Length: 143
Image (tube, rainbow, N blue to C red):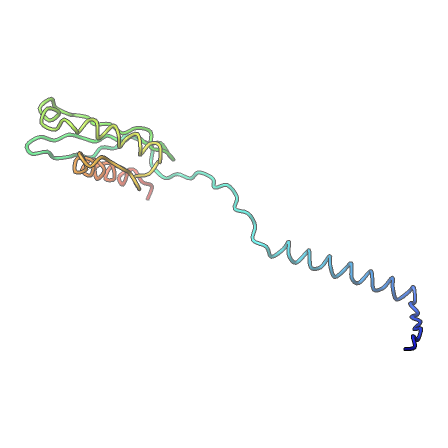
């Protein structure tokens, strides 16, 4: 086997042009990537969700009624409580007050009435109270 020597001649001018064009090509690709990549989501600015105030919803229990009171400001639910709760109602429905307190804690923490959990023992009481809270929040929403 004979080894033939090959001589390659590179012109310095062509090498410089090639490096410049390769650099410009890489720069163009990086610029296109930066332009068309999705930008990170900016932090959402709190907007008005509610009209600030105190809103009530009435719950009918046999012959007596009670009100569920919801206090909101422009963007948050501040408190939920039972008002006009008669002693006879609290005696006949002893789970009403504990269920209301449990729901109020969860709703204020989550700032939503979605995915609220309640005990199996007082699920119907909790559902009645949750419906009343939803009614009051519907009254408070910005149109």
